Amino acid sequence: MGRVSNYDKFPVIPTGAAQECSVGWAAIGDRLRSHLTEHGAIALECYPGVHSRCVLSELRDHLPGVIFFSAEDCLKTPEELRALLDPLLGSDRVFARMSDLGLETYFDAAKLRQMCCAVEQTARHSPVVVVGTGATLVSPSSAVVVYADLARWEIQLRWRRGEMGNFGLNNTGAEFAAKYKCGFFIEWRAADRLKQQLLPRIDFLLDTNASSIPGQTQAPKMIAGDAFRHALANAAQRPFRVVPYFDPGPWGGHWMEEVCDLPHDAPNHAWCFDCVPEENSLLFGFGDHRVEVPAIDLVFSHPRELLGEAVYARFGAEFPIRFDFLDTMGGGNLSLQVHPLTEYIRKTFGMAYTQDESYYLLDAGPDATVYLGLKDNISREEMIAGLYRAQEGEENFPAEKYVNRWPARRHDHFLIPAGTIHCSGANSMVLEISATPYIFTFKLWDWGRLGLDGRPRPIHIEHGAANIQWDRTTDWVGRQLINRFEPVATGDGWREERTGLHEFEFIETRRHWFTGTVPHDTAGGVNVLNLVEGEEAVVESPTSAFEPFVVHYAETFIVPAAVGPYTIRPFGKSAGKECGTVKAYVRSES
Image (cartoon, rainbow, N blue to C red; front, side, top):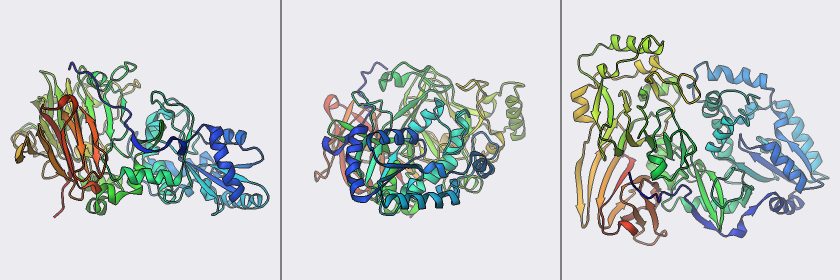
């Protein structure tokens, strides 16, 4: 490796002035007090996972003379909620069906009516603040709306630390996987439906994330709703990066520790989620203050500008492209796995599209390999029986008897349409380019190891066997799925190659090598890029529609559809040297 890291772990979108951001409960209380005088009531709506009781306690200290209500006093009992949710979640440790429940189903209708009346009557003679998830369900329509938002990664960390459970379930002690499953399939879906209704009209945005940004206080921050909406609108018109996060895993490696300048506070770093807007966040800069919001807020608020009309019409307000890192340098093989076919994921889990993907090799050791596709003339019955025996601990699964093992080199590209058995081997640094529904991975064999929690990782042979495409064997894989590089265009100091993905997949990828200025155009659809070669490059607008945007090696960045034409050229230490980008976008259906 031998690189000096310039990877930015806390990318900021400059937005406004410091005075637009209230920092700390005292300043927040002062700002809300004047609105209470004018409107008489505040609804402080909380995304599930916000410590609403702490918010209520702090505001009570800073808003004397105000009557407080907790919306969560109207929840159904944990027993009633479990009776509602358990049948939807089922018994599988990982998978369930995507839920269409609304947040209001978590509440007791009679208690809601009673609190609505109490709030309305109290507000006639005294200022009122309703706090908690569901606060807007019991507040007068004239109430000032404060939305306390929270990044998905912060929610997951709180679950792992045992600070909280799922909304209303009183399951703080449950294992993380159970909390995540409930959150992914039910809780976040319900909360996002209410959020989408509220974002256009909130009066204030409250950031209660526990900041890990150097130089930033742990105090909460609040901005006006108009400032928040301006920040989102600004982001939808210029290139930007989401805030990456890193996580260890049983197969994880150590490449990112050096290249991404990570602390050595974990056994390894297996994943980097650096473009998954459903779970990553955005940092808006107000002077020196940083306001963190879920990146999905941008998708919800400006889907046409971000995604483009055609992509929005096809996928709705969902970001369909994911970039992430899989680091096995000095680690082990990923689990042997397969992703569901589109019809299977639709019928079984209620998802509209599946996780087609690819592995782009950012780096590779001399012995790096990728397992991809089946060998010729194998017995499927024998293979499935062997997987079940391995799951029961009777024997190790002889993966290389059934699955091709291909050598992997830096800048190789392996295409993995759904239904293709695959995994990255040890000593590889993979940029995974895929469709977004990443939780739907059917593990078939995990090399006999345990997860970091000391438990066997969930295996889904029955699901996997129903989706493996048995005709994707050695010759077909070699011709169709490996390094399908095709020259497309050249210009002054640049050349463009088509690199995939496969015709079965809806994502197109292009690689550009350049020493000069490369012309790009979003052509009405969102672009996602990564600087796969070179220290630095700069993204610019030919019409100066946005400020020059500098990116560094291995950083993923998003160019919204609304940007239109843009250019990329080497910058700084890379001036005069060859750089490379990989770009992904959604293919036209025509």
